[in-house]
Length: 96
Image: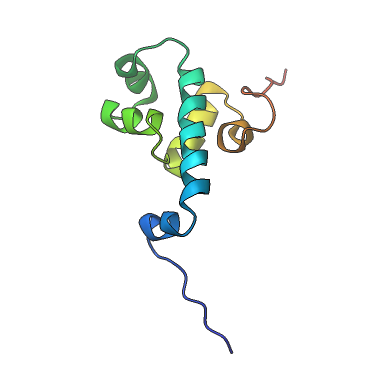
């Protein structure tokens, strides 16, 4: 039996593929700025119910937590496939 040691922290994981992770997180930040749509960080963080400092970090390229992404998807109608991978349209169509 072969044992594989997996990294436990994000920092270790990111150090294994820094170019890929950094490029993807900066793109998520750019896509978040698109969704922000002219609102101030202060206003948008209040609307989302998160600390402004967290929103600032996410907009600057830090990977958002999955809970934040799920909340953003529900609240703003954001297509998470677009937000994370850049595939598809930014907003989900509303079913009637």
